Image 1: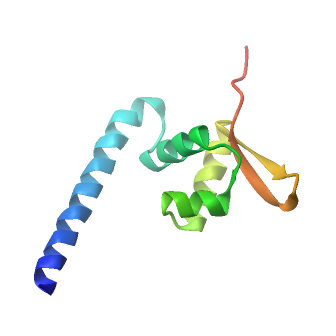
Image 2: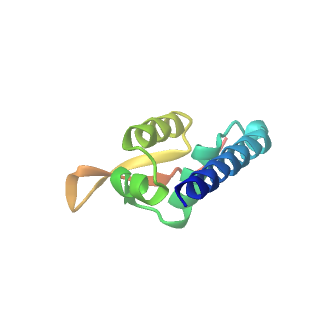
Length: 100
């Protein structure tokens, strides 16, 4: 039973890696990686989440999420705002498009 479970998880991990590679290939022209696209989609659908909430919802390591948010912020795709209810927290939003 344990060997069957191990084999199943091995195949699931392989499928996951292949799907991320495929997504990265398709997103290459947009200069966005798979994890960044996942984050952008979640923030678009559910704005004003904290980094801690986003990390939990995306099942990402908080430090990886912080780096990803920082990179997207540098490219002006997301913006951090202080939570009015708790100034210690930052809420993540999709940035407003810049006009020429």
